[in-house]
Structure formats: C-alpha cells, structure tokens
Image (cartoon, rainbow, N blue to C red; front, side, top):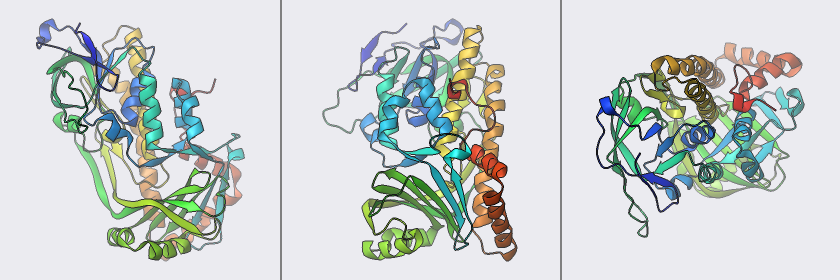
Length: 435
C-alpha cells in the first residue's frame, strides 16, 4: 500500500511512485470519487463503516468549493439520509425549515396549501446553504479513517480494465499563496470510479456515455431578500406564464427567491437598478412579508434538462449532476443526487460484504435499475410542470386550474403529490429509513 501524508487542509493524501500493471494490481483504494461537492462527499460519508477504502479527488481548493453562494430546498428524504449517516445533528441548527408550501397559478384565487400534517411530520422540508452542507460533510469526513482526500487535483484519464481502473491524476492549481505543496500521485489503481463531477462530467465523457436533453428558453434569477415581517415558515411556488417564482425561507428574517423568466427578461432583471428591481419584485412577491430589501448580489443561471442514457459501465458509476440535471422547479436537483449517493453506497456495501467485485457491471446494474427509473419520474415531473404552467394557452390554463382545485379539495391526492415531491415515494435507501 502507498504511504499516507497530510495535506494543508488536514485530509489524508496518498503517494504512489510507480504505476502498477493491471495483471499484478495492488489496489490503492476500492473506489475513487471524482468530485468533492455535496453529492461526492455524501457518498464518501455514507460509506463510513462499510470497510471500503475511498479516495476523493477534487479539482478546487476546499476554501473555494465551500464559498459558493447557492442554497437548496432540502427534502425530508435528504434530511433522513444525513441523519442516517450521522451528520444531521450538526447541519440542522444551521438551516431553516418550512411547515407549509403554498402552490398557486399567477392570479388564480385557488391556492393549494401543503401542510406538515399531510405527512404527519413536524416539518415539510428545509432550506440549506451550500457552505453549511459542504462544510459539515467535510468536517465529518475528517473523522473517517476510510477516506483520503486529493485536493486540488484533476483526473486527466481513466483506463478501464476487467479487474479495475487506472486513474491518471495531476496536481491542480493552488490559489492561496500560503498553501503548502502536496504530493499528488500520477496514477492510482482502484476497483471502480464514481463520477460526481457535475453536469459537464469529464469522467462521463471520457467513458463515452451519451446524454439526452435540452436547454430551456428560460433562465433563473436568484437573490436573497431581507423581510420586514416573518415568513412564518411558509415556502411558496407561484407559476406565471414567464416561469415559476419560488420563495424559500433561508433564515428567520430572510428568504431566497428563484425567479424564472425568458433569457432576455432574466438578464434585464439582473442588470436593473436595485430600487427598480425591488419595485418589480414587490409586485411579484406580494405583501405578506411587508417591505423587502435586497441582500448581496443577484445572479442568473440558465435552466437545462439532461439525462444520461446509462448510469454505469464496467468499473464506473455516475451520481448527481453527472447523471442528470433538471429544471429547478420543485427543488428536485440536489435531492436526487443525495438519494443517488445513498443508494449507490448501499449497493456497494452489500456487494463488498458478500465478496463481490464492486466494480463489476452486474453489481452496478442494481444501482442503475434502482435510481434511473426514479430519476426519470422526477425529471419528467419538473419538465411537465414547467411546460404546463409556463404558457397562456386557454385549454391548459383551465385544465391546471381544475387540477389545483382537485389538489386543494382531495386530501389523498394532495398527500400522494406531496410524498412524491418530498422524495418519500418509491424505494428509499436504508439510510433514509426512520428508526
């Protein structure tokens, strides 16, 4: 086995001086997770106690990765996975929760109110900042002897063999002048690779896995808003012909908005003077939280839909955005990736404990059968929801108003929809099972 040293971040870094011929391979690790974002670190954390040796390879320094300004709606299923891993108790005090979701269509008076008692739970979900989730996951991994960390480092090539994968690695670029030099191995020999490196996954592309998808005609403007009045732990999803408008409580006196509009309109909202933007926002937002103030900068990202034609190959599995991306309506994206990680961890641990080769395609097919169908349903749901509500066609307008009334009046239908949106329908990973 290679020797182990410590990086400037305190994580373990392994050194390998010479490549090992595939026929005589001595594995440095059981699996290499390429991508140290939330989904990749969730997978590494979920494998604690599995007996599997893991290396996480991340291109960005941790200080940059943690500093991203995103925030996410976190489903009940995701909070339960983190509870099962053992990291939720440190995350929970730093996130905001909501007990209701109000769903409406522009100026239609019918408002569907999803409430926590529909699921017989004290809350419906959470809103978590990126820095909180990733920081707590990284601190958790510091306590895990089974995980080593290569950062910043990049995978330049992956050579797949019947009995393992040779991973070619190069050092990344340090941005902090005080960062210490670390020794990055040129090659690692592992039983399998997990691609958690985002929607433009180089690992997926190197493996020749095709995707299908499209760019939407919309972009999403995101901003943080300070409130005059309490949000009362209510999240809002309001549909307009230009696109959905979401309000998510992110702190006691703040909310995060996701304002979806055609590209040119979204850019105009981004470039608009602050007072003019707030005047338009107040009309779209409503009076329920009083006068609004902008906190920090606005930013815009394009909405895209993508699904990989397969999630696996011999010695390879895709998770999170490397496998799928969807429209942000309904807050499905990150939550699907978290469930991918928990499901893959379960499949790998079961295979390892029964003496199987974790990189064997027959083992990995279990993960693909489990997650690809469930993700298809969620991705299809977001696409249909956005297309049905983001238009002015009279027939669809009337149909969706009828649909909202049915959800409002028929409790079992409302509960089915809510369970699906909260990630509680279909097969759940063992980590998400309530004890």
